Image (cartoon, rainbow, N blue to C red):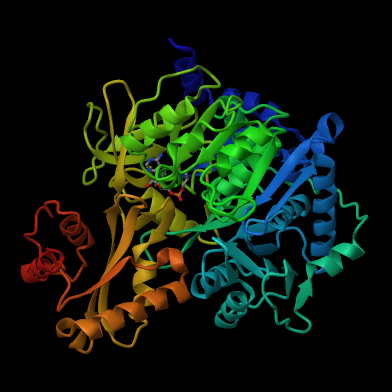
Length: 635
Ligand code: PRX
């Protein structure tokens, strides 16, 4: 048996021994009394009785050996700022922030919602929460007031940490007005708001509620706030993600299991070593940012680069398609993590840019979030001359489900496949309708995971165990098994291929959006009777959202100018409500939407027609003419 096969086998056959060994990669105040508690499936508890702290493992633990080495490197090509924080400086910053949170009444178990651009203060806030046992809920800074409001309402934060503005491609995006509007819309109101003023946009402060971070931090300059030791199973954070319904789900994660899972993945999957530099181009608003900008690299004792800006602009704010490679050279990055979309953007730049810098420090580039198409994979592999490692996972899992574990044993990758199941994951391909396991090569089914799920995996849906069980564990008939809601196949060598979502999730440039959320925003327009939103294949972004709308007043159906005007209004509405990311690429007007006889919207059929595929069996369809109309519209 190969080394990895052996390693994997042990993780499945003897999970307690396997994970007890991995648990030694982090510091514990009290070691676990019980490694695994799977007595109440599908709930899984890891390292029960153990006490630890994520911030201790990410920061304090490294002070003795590498206090003066870089921990966080901040580069903003939006503001032209480049700044290093050593582990010691990071420790100071996090304590100041923690003291400020405490001064504003935040304690263990309280929620702190973080709505921030990619600035170091966002990482300080996350680590400060972890330090004192507060639960952080980071909301992606690109989301607008509607999305933010629903998350505030669900998380019921005591405090919100935010900033005056973010910036993208030189365009300032004021956050404060969006935040004020979100708080106004939400039934829950936070006690306090802590605001970082970057000097990018004016802020109107609400007396008694809003506090400027600078003033508080100055009061707590020399603060010493020890880490609060938390139960391993205590909640570290929640992060919202989209699914089938319009209401986002708060994915809830523990403390000890997550710390161990990240430490293990840094060793076995990413092969990143203490003292080196890790560069992930994601955003703290997404799970990749939580796991592999903030916690993972720091737990491993690596410096992490936090990058604000486009991949095509330099620190002098002039066009520079080589900025990322410049950073790889300058900071001797050994491990890089990005998304296929970013590579497709870079592919349009001068290929000589890849040869201009000394990239010899780089050992691998990891790509995740959406399918990696072969031309893109080959282009970047040839350009960089290092392994390109596709990895498949989800907000729910917290770390890769499918990839190769080069830290255990170097293994070939196959283009188009993220790889094989990672240790701890019992991955199955199941028949969608019968739930039967498909064991043959290249049989298409739903990718599912059998419990107990490994450390780091979501504990439950925040405040909604029933939703966790019903949504994720009961979608395959007759079996209590976790559905990823992705289609997949496994080839004769055991490599998996992901073939798109089984639900209504749209993946725009690696960002996960729910069609229902976009539909709900569009439905709010007074001239919209009905709407269907589907994801349609796109060369650059992987998918884009496309909306089909039945207008209340028929003008948009017959008059091109009226249609254009309504399309503009709808796009603006979605951008204002959810954020520019969710704005449909196109809005088309139709007399009716294709539905089943029981009134269920046939999004998959619409999507197939948009992508010029066969929409499949339409015998249950109520009105085939509706689909015909869409076909004609697109012709
Ligand atoms: O559909 C799969 C796709 O992205 C979904 C998860 O998105 P999110 O929760 O935002 O987490 C991203 C973490 C990297 C999956 O259900 N997806 C993610 N990675 C891949 C992928 N599809 C194909 N190949 C991948 N490597």
